[in-house]
Image 1 (cartoon, chains in turn purple, yellow):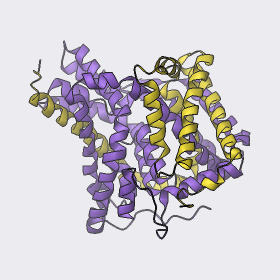
Image 2 (tube, one colour):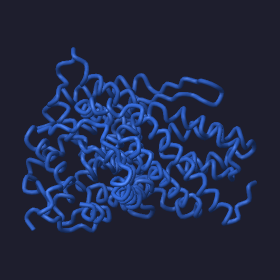
Image 3 (cartoon, each protein chain N blue to C red):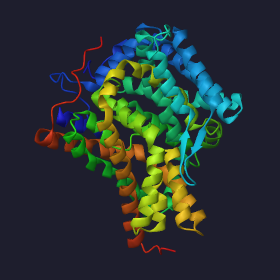
Image 4 (tube, rainbow over the protein chains, first blue to last red):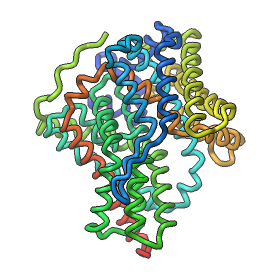
Length: 309
Length: 163
């Protein structure tokens, strides 16, 4: 299992051993295919109609900024409304047309739609390849600094997480990372639940948390101003914006450079970051998990999962 | 060899037909959202979504047809990069139309499906609780400090003056 997954991460696993019954990635692919093939998912007008209404509501509300202090503002973007409204529509008792069946079709369809997201990111990568070469080693190498999230894995294990911790600590858990983890482990896997948890919590508290973090760090860490600028590109547009504010204020007269580095580093996180996650961070996190889990793992805090089908 | 890729025997014209219809639905919703949120002209962004959907379709198809156990993400990424590579004859066309689609528009629609699909796992989400919040905060801090410290070391080593 360990070996098998590790090979797959490198994309060189040609022949899965049939005796290993844990074809995680095939199970989800099969399920997805089954759902897409048998249920004529495009015919479920309740689901797609609801999504359309959610998107229209979300885009009409638009981005809301709630300023707390001069530099700190909570930014709520349309994508947060749709994920929360989608969940509310499923959970709300009076809404009878979004039920388990719709949720399962949404799940299957989602696997296909991840591709569109990845395609958009890939086009941006191709476009900026010249810039990536021009901007020097610091910008590219700092992307590897994001691997520091793996250091949180032991803490996650001590808190009682099992395989969720792989999804939680392989990266900052933003949209591209969610796509990568879901594609690799499947929607219903513990790893995906972990990355979704980080995504939702990060969406709600990430912006404000990173504002405070940056403000504090600027006053007690003697780092290069450009380093602060590059680090603010964590791979989330709203977190990037929240991190730049205090950095600009701390280094007056360097606004242009700081904005340039921060913007480009965020672009890099979105474009190159997913490849670091696929080829370095996930394999590393899995290996660390397999090594540490028997040593410091606690009893799972989650109830045993019921099989869905 | 027949079981190399599970489910591949299920992929028929009917299956591809389903994928195409789903991608059309997704594209239309995204274009409407893209218009409301960013005021990009609908025709241009429809062409942009058509390009992205085509890349997706080919990637998903390759994942199931090529005898390699490689995720469709990689096929899709490689196709996207190559099509947009500066100097490629396709790049101007692809960049112009794909730039009419905001990443956030795609994400907004995508997350509506995620939100509905997620409902099934809501109870487990609640079980994650405060521990997940602790981990999230630590993960964000680790990302930020990791990048800042590596960037600082490289900048000092390459002799970039601290202005």
